[in-house]
Structure formats: C-alpha cells, structure tokens
Length: 127
Image (cartoon, rainbow, N blue to C red; front, side):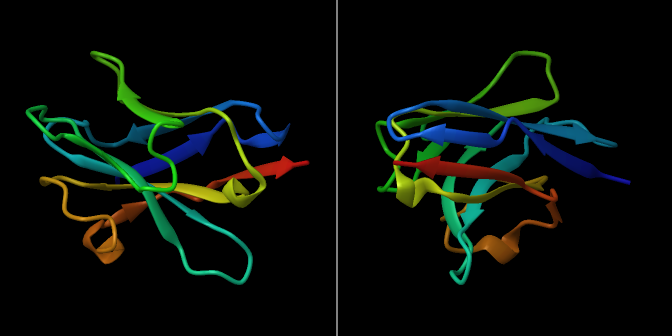
C-alpha cells in the first residue's frame, strides 16, 4: 500500500523559512509526479508546485504566488521530495499536503489527478 508522510511544518515569523519533506512508502518515486498543495481554513486546496521525477525540461512547476520563494527538489536515490520555503508570508499559512501519481505532471489545478495523498503538515506564519 502506498503511503505519503509529510513532515517539517511549524510556526515561523514573517520572512522565515521552513523545509517540508514528503516521504513515500510502499512505492518508488521513479517517473512519478509529486505535487505540493496547501489549504487554509475555509478555503479550497490550492496547488503550490509539482515535480516530475522522470526529469526532463519543465519537470518542476510552481504557482505564481510562490515562484522565487519556494523550491521543490528530490535528492538522488531518496524516496523523499522536499519543499523549501523562504521569505514566508502570513498568506502562506495553511496545511500543506503532498500527493503522488505514477505519471507525468499536469497543471496544478487538476488536483484530483493524484491518487495518493498524505495527511498534511501545518505551517503557520505570524507577523
């Protein structure tokens, strides 16, 4: 059974940084799309970014709201994808989820494309 586990969330002040991890169990990350999403209370889940682990041009994409501040990566040989978040703002507050599908990535708005989701990790940014 495939399972995703997020970690690394916490509370930071404006301008701070966090690094989230998404570890996959029961599957490999070979040639898969891993998406990062977040959901604030009372709001819809929105895409943050995605990475296609099969590589190639355009394999990493970001939402406009996080471009230049967030970085998605995967260390070679690891079954973990990272979301490095810098210059955090209060509007970045929410529960962050990772999701997996063993196919190429599609635009982030198609969140139902993913077939496995983690339980999420909370990120709170205070001023």
